[in-house]
Amino acid sequence: MKKIILVRHGETTMNLEKLYYGFLDPDLTKKGIEQVKSARKILEKFDYDEIYSSDLIRAYKTAELINYKNLDIKTSKEIRELNFGIFEGYTYEELQKKYPKELKISQENWKTYNFENGESPYDLQKRVVKFIENLPDGKTYLIGTHWGVICTLLSYYFSTGLESYWKYKIENGSVTIIEFKENYPLLSGLNLKGV
Image 1 (cartoon, rainbow, N blue to C red):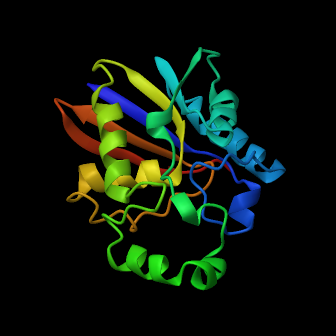
Image 2 (cartoon, rainbow, N blue to C red):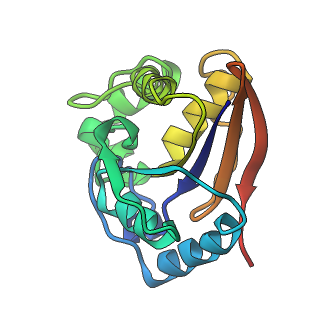
Image 3 (cartoon, rainbow, N blue to C red):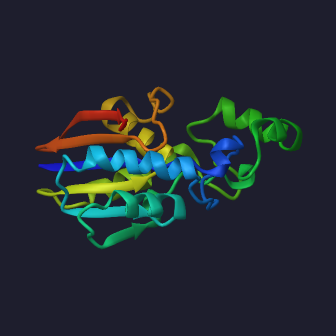
């Protein structure tokens, strides 16, 4: 059996500004820190053997705050957010003016659209699933990560490919738990939040 406990990073300034950002590296806001501290209260009910984080600061700080066992945090680029390429750092309204053609294509072919200088949601899913499936069985893994990473895993394991990618509400500082029993995935917690 393998269990993964996924924690979406707390709020950032770029969340507030409603920017497209994946590989950009903003820090947590004060509210974001409080969201993660609240998640830690939930996590103290669960044991974990190893802790991983995306190498981006918002996820790493999240991992530091939830790491109640004070284990060494292992970082990986494989569990980074989607790379939005040329869209990074812009609002939707700004993209409508700056990259209208690319924006339209990204909406019509969203699964496979390879953001210029970035990647597609399909590429994101491939790298994230590979990372999870390479984690050895018999352990529980606590992972500080991102909205896209969590949604791509949920979509892969609980629907077909990317079919349900947009159908999950994963809030900042929330906890999602997937257990694998003989490689069969079970969703045992979704968008759990502290008080």
